[in-house]
Amino acid sequence: MAIEPSSIPIIIRGRYFWRGDARINETLSDSRLTTQTQTVATPFNCINRANPYSSYNSDNVIHFLRTAGIMSCYPNTLGLTAADAVVNSHHSLRATPVIKAVIRDLKKYMIWSNKYNGTRILPVSYSAADVLNITRPQGFLEYLYLGDQASAVDFWMCKNYSWAGESSMAMSGWDAFLSRYEKFAIPAFLSEYGTNLIRPRQFHETRALYSDPMTRVFSGGCLYDFAEGPNGYGLVALPGTDETGWFGKSDIVETHGAETRDTDAGKLYILHDFGNYKAALAEPTSHNSSWSTMELEAVERHNVDTSLMSWPWGSELQMPETCIDWDNIEGLIGAGMPSPLETITQRLESTSILERTSGQAEHGSTCRTDD
Image (cartoon, rainbow, N blue to C red):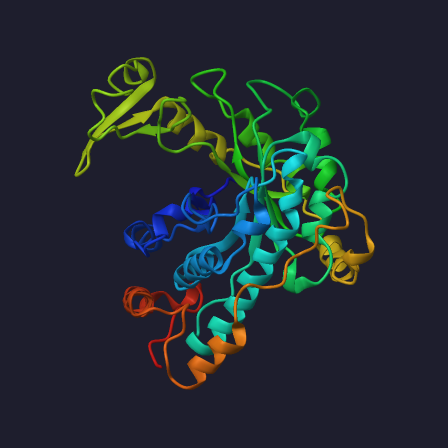
């Protein structure tokens, strides 16, 4: 059967929500489009791969938790991403235990928020960089995937840009890519995929992604990228005030433009790539999922004691203790006082979100406004 375009999640970068700006997600929620945060971090609050342990502090983690609190109020949020491509070299592998600590804190916070505020408990993922010498060897993925469920990822996101034009599973390396993940007993999808070496793009990789054998392991993916930029990957172009910048110097509309629409934000140029992508999704797909087997294996992965295993970053680097004073926070809430994680602004935002989504209860729980 064909893939419904509305079933493809949209990746939202965390910086759009660092102040609780709800405008983008309102539109997506009203359109019944699923969103997945690219990361709960922003350039201002993040785990620094060069100094991961010092950047794991209460200021940064509280920011992550507030983002989780806001996004869990939306019925169309698919999940949270604890970190995006933090590990991209052998040296940055030392950040892995810190990533696991962030996963643990996010999960604990959502359980806490569900208890006191009625918000949803979202699954948590990590988005891996397309760096084969990191993701292919044993160790990094297993550390985040195995062990106590309270600090393990619920699903896996990864990037891949190796399929170009009329390729094949072998030529593109997707056969080896598939084999790395086929034993994982958690859902996985591509958070970014696609190349633009040949334009207009024909999206043979999209057809492959939604066909056997890829559908045995991967639950689809998010094409890179929607909006056109200087790198030339977009499906549409909305230059806005940048008519004299990179867009003014580009011939993208003349060479690849298919349609022009007037919007409140200016001209919207729909490129030929947009139509080609829709056509690739509309083609019948072969689906052969082995989830029934993988689900049984998923029970066993949480019984692995990861503290007894050796990892590439050395035994001296362990998951840090939480930097959040959970007992103090629960005490404040129990006394009817606001906690450091629930500011007046956030409470107002949650109330506003609830009012806008009250008619969409079938898509999941939303925030309660009762104190």
